[in-house]
Image 1: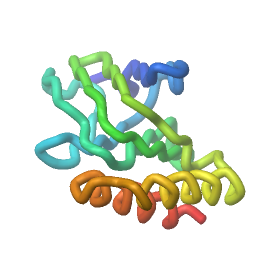
Image 2: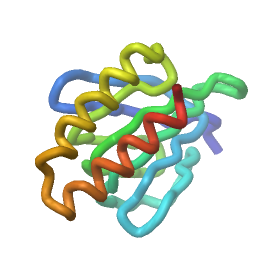
Image 3: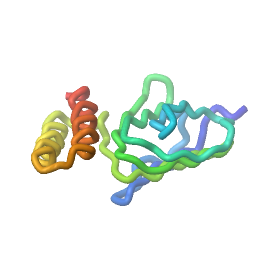
Length: 128
């Protein structure tokens, strides 16, 4: 059994992570999933939530995604995210700016969009 999984995480804006990692937790459309090396292959749609990447014991980074897809094979995992925000490396000023943008959008949002915006706001507030 391999101790690492080859992981590529991209969004339309940039390559976010391209590295060998110990584990990735994803917000799958049907529930959260923890991906380890030699995982059974599958593909899933991502819902808005936190992608947690364990590079090695004690080194974990968290990213907020609004959606996308994850493709898992036994030795490789790829995430194609609609959008991504690095929660682990963003300072409180950046996160507060994101909340301000969400608050502006909430003022004119439809009801179903408000639910997603409120959830996104709550996820970001947990890191301030």
